[in-house]
Amino acid sequence: EGRDWVAIGAKYRGYLSSIATDREFGELVGNMFGELSASHLFSIARNRNETVAGLGIHNDVLGVYLDYGYEGAGRRIAAILPGGPLDRHGLDIGAGDIIASINGVAVPDAGGIERLLDVNLQKSVVLGVTDGDGSNERFMRVRPIDTYTEDRLASQRWRDARREMVDRLSNGCVAYQYVAEMMSDDYLGVMGTFSGTTTAKAALIDVRSNGGGNLTRELITLLTGEPYGIV
Image (tube, rainbow, N blue to C red):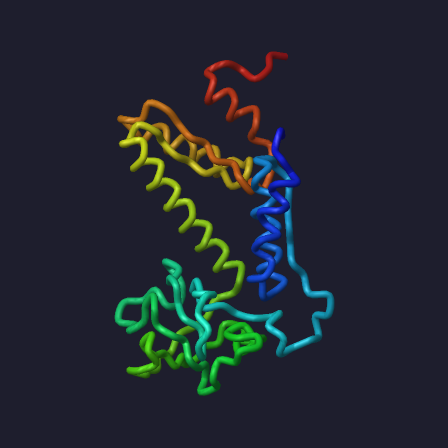
């Protein structure tokens, strides 16, 4: 791919000190693979001992991005994932607030939220939340989601942000479409993007972290206007 793999490795090793779980490490490696802009590269974090509980390995999630620079009690929220458990009308919670407890148990320094949601299996929980200075404590009942659902929501958030950035920087002259897999649904997504724009003069087809499949020939034919091969 012509990429400097040594430099890429050095870049991502710089994030290791902030990794707290096997899942986070798997995501870091997956992002590093994405630098290659190649298909069929995967990183999956699996627990070797599926009988172990209480170690943050079977955990549900709340759909939040945490402020890892925060050193006080609980966990401070950096952002809330759109569509996640905390993205609900009427919930008095947002960036800068602190998740202080879950079901009446203070969020521990070791393991944090993941430890308290271990083996929760999407049962509803009561969050104790405070303002950033620890005041105005309030309680709210929410239903956590599994990590697969969170990954899908996070992926959509990432796509929406990339699409908005491309549209803004190009002044609407470049259409953006992410292709998650080389499958029919993604091909139809590309077609929908092309047919739905009237101002774009170019297209950016993003295939980072692509899951693979058999769409390459169809995409090349669509983008070039020439048949990929003639038999």
